[in-house]
Structure formats: C-alpha cells, structure tokens
Length: 290
Image 1 (cartoon, rainbow, N blue to C red):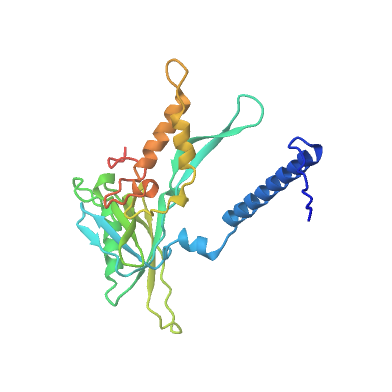
Image 2: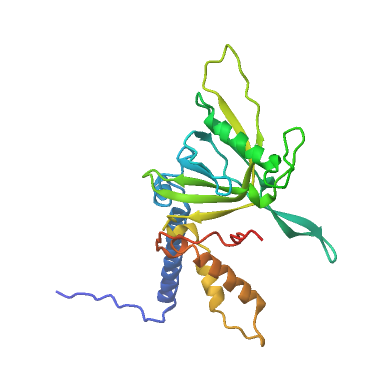
C-alpha cells in the first residue's frame, strides 16, 4: 500500500511568512491585554489594599494635655481637659511677578494666629479655673517691679519671660503608646470664656480657655513603616544620582539634597526603621525661640 506525504512549504514561502506575521501580531495583542489587566488590578481600589496601607487609625479621644510654667510653679497635667485643638501652620505669601502672571512668594510663617483653645471640666472646687485665674493675675499684677503693683482695673504687666510657659499635646495610638507630640512654646492664658448657669441645666460645668503661643514643635514617636506612603522617594533618589556636569555646583541638586536630609530626620517614616527618639519636625524654630 502506497502512502502520500504532504510536503511542508519552504520557510520563506509567502504563506508561511504571513502565518508567522499573524502569530506575532496575536502575541503582541495578548501581551498588551495582559499588561492592561495587571495595571488595572494595581490601580483598583479595594479593601485589602486599604488594610495593607492603613493601621487602626488615629483617634481624636486618645490624647493627654500638659501645661507648664516653671517660672510661676504651674504644672497642670490636663486630666480634666475634655477638648483640645492641634494647632496648624500656614505660610504667609505676597503676590510677586517680574512680568506676566503673579506667583505667591512666602515671607512669614503663621501659626493660625498663635492661639489654641482648650476645654476643661470643672470640679466643685474650680481648681483648674483657679490656677488659670492666678496665672492671668500674675501677668497684669506686675509683681516685683518696685512699688508698682497692678490690678484688673489698673494693670501693670510683667515682663514677657516672667509668665510664659509650655504646653504639650500628646496623641496616643490604640495600644496606649505615644504617637505624636505637639509642644507649644511661650504659652499663657489669653482668654477665659464666660460660663453660663441655669436651673434647667444639671450637667457638669465646663470652661473654655484660649491660650496664646508663639510657635510649636512636632515629634513623631512611632512613624509608620509602610513604604507606599512616600512613593516619590525613589524618584528623588534617582534625581540625586544624576552627575553634576555644571562647574561650581548645581543649586537645584543642593536643594534636593537638603530636602532629602530633612526627610532622613524622620528615619523610620521613609527608610522602614523605627527609632524611639525622633527629632523635631524640620523647619521648626529652635528652642531659644529667636
């Protein structure tokens, strides 16, 4: 019995060439579609990604306030402080332009007007209000300045450094570990608000006090190690790896280097290493307050 054998077409035959071309086109489309699917999966927001990049969260009711004025011997641990405000910071700018559209140029740092409000529960002795009243009285009494002594009607104000103190607002995490510390400098009670009394109100009295301060410092005690928080750090490192070809140095690279040095001060926040002593937030004034 005779058999027939189908001869294969030559490699460079037009039909085989067209078939290879179609196969390559199919492979390219297939790879492109797979990349789109993977890209969509990376960008898709889901609860698992949120859990991976988020912990239990900072809670507004986990804090402790301490108010200190060593000159006057005042030390308030703030156990009865039921409401506090974390101060903010704003750059004051002015419009400037050599020509064309204006740009905003910063010229000063504003700490939200230098005021922060606290609310205290009053016990039957009004001890917190008593301390704050005495603190205010020391400001306008002018004690120690010769024969002059002031009153609320005829104030004689003391020197500034004789009545300012510090305030510490410390935030805690869910495990009762210190998380963030806000330290306000040159603090004194600016305003003790009025308290309303009523026969129809049987709740515990509260007193709201506004404190003046000059500036604040921030300490992050236990920074997060999630690397996804600062994805721009890789680009920053690549930028610093570019060799400087300009004679006399590159001011742009120097600025980036200074910025990276400031980021490094946060240690674990960007490098994944935790330290117990994290330095003050870059850009804060020194302890001297000058």
